[in-house]
Length: 143
Image (tube, rainbow, N blue to C red; front, side, top):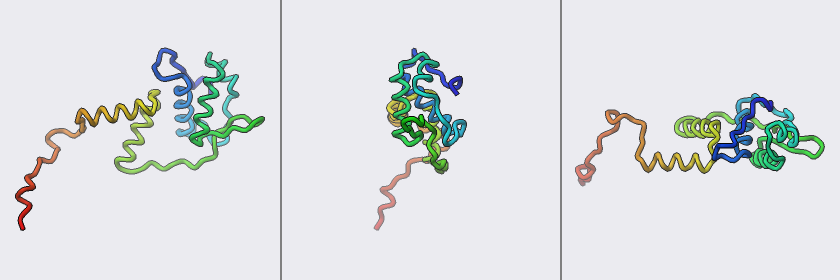
């Protein structure tokens, strides 16, 4: 499993967030199944060349979101949680975007910033020819 994790120390994304995002992704895909034991913090830190506290923070963040459980003497294991179903429509598209952004190592703040920027720039992704023409509502107000 350690071979699947990569940390880019030149990235603006903190190493703990890179680890958290990659593990969350592997859990989401089912690559790390329920009850699978994660490597001990010290071992993973040594394997990745990071401080123990960095890996411990990634594990804590995963535990806060309910993806893993930790027990003294029992290690950290993937939580036994039901797989969420993919929402339909706009919610599903948003979920896909968030998943892709996290795979790329983006933080929640970076994802929100990207969405806000797209909204501010007026990006619609809909070709001009497919957009509805504005209608004159003044003629609709007959009474």
